[in-house]
Structures are given as C-alpha cells and as structure tokens.
Image 1 (cartoon, helix red, strand yellow):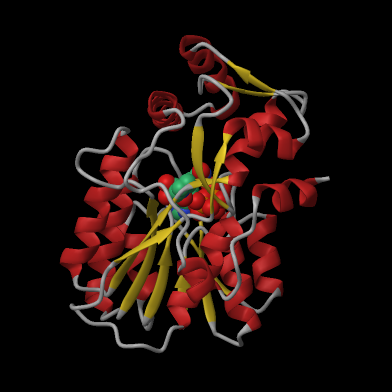
Image 2: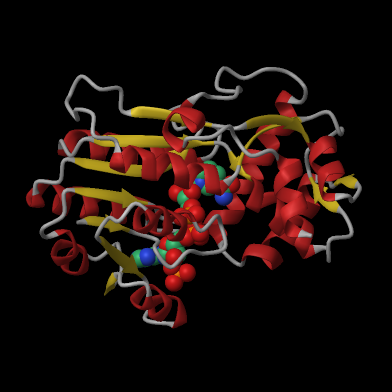
Length: 288
Ligand SMILES: NC(=O)c1ccc[n+]([C@@H]2O[C@H](COP(=O)([O-])OP(=O)(O)OC[C@H]3O[C@@H](n4cnc5c(N)ncnc54)[C@H](OP(=O)(O)O)[C@@H]3O)[C@@H](O)[C@H]2O)c1
C-alpha cells in the first residue's frame, strides 16, 4: 500500500494526482489523501483508489491514513502550514514503520536560501531525516505550470514578471517529470538505508525568461517588483505564495544570466522517470 498526498491535484503542479496515475499503471495499491471530498475525490474512487479525506496539518487525520503503509509521497502546496504538515506526517510515518517517504522540496532548499519557503523546505527535510523514514527529498526547479499560471493571468497575451532583461535564467521542470521521478523512487526496489543520499535534484531545463515567453508565443514584459507584488495578490490570493514568489523572482533578477551552484539539468529525471526531461516548448505545445 502506497499513500499519496495531494492526490486530488491542484493549481501548482498536480504532482500527487500524476503519481497516483503512474502507480496505478504499475498495478500498485494506492491510498489517496485528499483535502476535501469533492469531484476529484469521486474520480479517484472510480479508479479503485482508497480515499482518505483530511487536513495534513492534523495528526488525528494523518495517523490513521499511514496505518499499513510502507511507502508514501508527501507534497504540500506553497501556502501556510508546511512545517505543521511535515511534523504530523513524519511522526505518523515513523510510528507506522514507513520505509520510504518521497517528499517534494525545492531546488535550493537550504538554511541560507533566498526565500522563507525554501528555508522552511530545508527544515522540513531535516524533520523527515530525523524521523528515520527513508526520506528522499525531491528538490525541484520552477514548474512550467507556474509560468503558465502567470501567462494565463494576462489572458495569454504576455508573460509579465519582475525578472529584469530577457536573458535572465530560470531553472525549470515539468511537474509531470517531478511526478515520474517521485513514482520511480517509490517503486525503486533498491535498498533504503541511512547511507543513501536523501537529496534528489530534479531540474529539466535551464532557459531564459525570453525563451520561455517565446515558447508560449507571447512577449516577455519586465514588471517593476512593487507592481508585481500587487498583481500577484490578485493572481494567488495567498500571502505565503506571494511572499515566496516575490523573493524568488528577485533572486533570479539578481543572478540574471549568471550562475548559481544549483543551476543545471539533472540525470535523475531519466534515471528514475524513465525518459529525458520535457522541454518548455513541448509543454507549451501541449497547452494549445
Ligand atoms: N510551483 C512550482 O514552481 C514549484 C517548484 C518547485 C517545487 N514546488 C513544490 O511543489 C509542491 C506543490 O506541488 P503540487 O503539484 O503537489 O501542488 P498542487 O498541485 O497545488 O497540489 C496540492 C494538493 O495538496 C492539497 N492540500 C492543500 N492543503 C492541504 C491540507 N492542509 N491537507 C491536505 N491536503 C492539502 C490540495 O488539495 P485542495 O486543492 O483540495 O486544497 C492539492 O490537492 C510544494 O511543496 C512546492 O514547494 C513547486
């Protein structure tokens, strides 16, 4: 039995939903943890998945969901509550004797990272490591979907971001590739022990923001950072998401066409996901 959180999917990447599909294709038994009992949950039940409804921040909901589970996928959207959810999940997974938790983190999760959310992801990784649940941290670059949301907010007329010139680089990955790596690691029959490297870098492409806009077939527009923050609240209606993205874009703007130690394309996608990374152009073509 494999427990998948974020199983209904959502607006950030829908990785949990895609992991469910990949596991079902492989004939695995899946228990889906969803936030609300809506149409998405009904769809999962139709697929033969056991559905548990609850709040990941609430230990009383998480504890029973992990009973009888050996492997689990943990994802929590960019909103308040990541550390509460992590603590509840790690404690319950430890109690249940879970042998592997594959959890979604961010490319530069570190104590010195440039956004509060990335620093929280590092703390979350620490908690999973201490719990001794065979944690693997999927440190992912910016999801293509993230930029598609920005384009959609303008009616797909422009890609307006506070990133400086069009040659500013962004580390990018398809949420589908993150899900493939996640599913691959859940199914990987290899040993799970304390000597295994818990960090798995998942980034599929380095592209400039000009190239991204080109792939979407719209112009890139450099927006002043203050203007972006005001617009962002209208798009996301979530303070944590706006705080994270405002800091993230400022970081990319500062680095520009330069280099950061985590920038790169990683072989994890091909190794665990079974195919080369999707490109932003392929992703954009799929949206048309
Ligand atoms: N977006 C990016 O560019 C990017 C880049 C790198 C890493 N990441 C990481 O990717 C992760 C999010 O990706 P994702 O594809 O899983 O997001 P997603 O598609 O937005 O899915 C999030 C899921 O979590 C559920 N959920 C929300 N709050 C919950 C709660 N309190 N209890 C139980 N379930 C809850 C949502 O359900 P409802 O819809 O019903 O609320 C939804 O199904 C984050 O950790 C983020 O840091 C994102």
